[in-house]
Amino acid sequence: MYILRFSPDSASLIVRLVLEELGLPYEARPINRDAGELSSPQYRALHPLGKIPAMETPHGPMFESAAILLYLSDRHPGLAPAPDALDRAAFLKWFFFTSTNIHPTLMEIYYPERVAGEAAAEAVAVHAAARMKVLLAALDTAAEPNPAWLSAYKPSLLGYYVAVLMRWLGQNKPSSVAYIRSTDYPALHKVVAMLEARAATRTVAEAEGLGAQPFTDPI
Amino acid sequence: MYILHYAPDNASQIIRLMLEEMGLPYRTALLDRSTRAQDSAQYRAVNPTGLIPALQTPDATLFETGAILLWLCDSHVSMAPAPGAPGRADFLKWLFFTANTLHADSRLLFYPEQYAGSPEAIPAFRSACEARIHRDLGLLEALAASAPDYLNAQSPSALGYYICCLIRWINLYPTDRTGWLHLANFPALYALALALQERPAALRVSTAEGLGSTIFTAPHYADPPEGSVI
Ligand SMILES: N[C@@H](CCC(=O)N[C@@H](CS)C(=O)NCC(=O)O)C(=O)O
Ligand SMILES: N[C@@H](CCC(=O)N[C@@H](CS)C(=O)NCC(=O)O)C(=O)O
Image 1 (cartoon, rainbow over the protein chains, first blue to last red):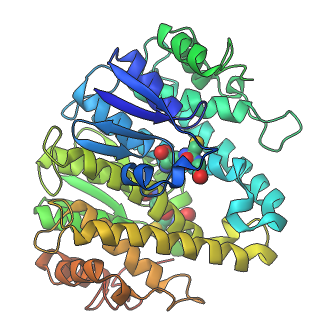
Image 2 (image 1 turned 120 degrees about the vertical axis):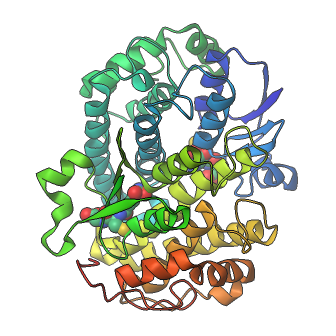
């Protein structure tokens, strides 16, 4: 049994969608952020940096959403190429690309003041948004031929990861430098629009209050 | 036969160390950074992000250091816990942590002008980066001190080479601000660095890329026989 430590609409969402899609038994255990639970010794034992998500597994506590996703998909096949599959290489490079480039750049857009202080926040966000558009364009090109690992016709690990990142970008106000919509990236848009209609997404959207179109028209 | 697209003392070094350690046949394809060969149409066809490294295999082209490492480990069942093996879950979380936090923060440190927003913001930006890197290395120190299979001084590992190369570059770059990281304060990482730099694989890479001795514990700027570091 997996115990996912979560907070609504945070990076735990990516893992929760995948747990639902795989139909795995799990407990979603909320984190009491207001009570400072992220800094508690108990939580730090799960995640030494006190970030979200963390997940308890039969193999001990895990953190890093991408690591948890890969761990789950290697144990419960279906959402990504298996370790010995021919298209594992293509999947892995775009999966790491998303985790090491797109995800951190998104954090710079969301928390620009953490990068170089309040005074630089605006300029940091402008730079990060410009980089984000280049990164998403590259991923969109990779999605165009509809690879199984980022398909518009069937759910995938990377698809859910991208869907959540698109959700967060789409929450920016139209006046924001980082106002980016899934429709700006046609191949990715097809992927996330398809995922939005999945029963797994409906279940999680209901549980976390994410609205009717959590990926293509997030609120 | 693998083809490693590389520039001396760039992130490609991590992969080269792995290929040497695993004893795999490969050849290198040099990217001349002095002419920004990483931006050429030819290289963009290999890696659309224009970052170094990329690895061509008989079946596919890979990029992203972490992806290449994991793929090599799984394909050759070596230098990291295999899927399903004990330690796999822990290995994965620290691999991703290294790739998207320590490595990502190192990139910020090396190229402040791309990330700080404005020249005036660079000092605050650097301090924030250095603080995060200290924090990250503190966590990896605790991990190394517990000496798991996938990170110890007794046996070479993918994660060990990855972390030690990052430590090397953090000590060398940016060239106008070095000397703030004291590896001696991280004794388990120091022991790891010392052990890995003496391995025959590391000595071969050192010769090929002109790195001198003590490549991890007391690094010098590379004097490569071909190509340009930046
Ligand atoms: N690389 C991490 C990033 C996780 C992350 O940044 N989580 C955010 C929430 S989306 C968090 O915990 N923020 C709280 C904080 O930084 O204090 C992952 O993918 O798990
Ligand atoms: N996330 C990438 C980062 C690689 C990276 O930063 N490579 C540097 C060299 S160490 C590079 O290509 N720099 C050239 C440039 O940015 O144009 C990876 O892990 O492969």
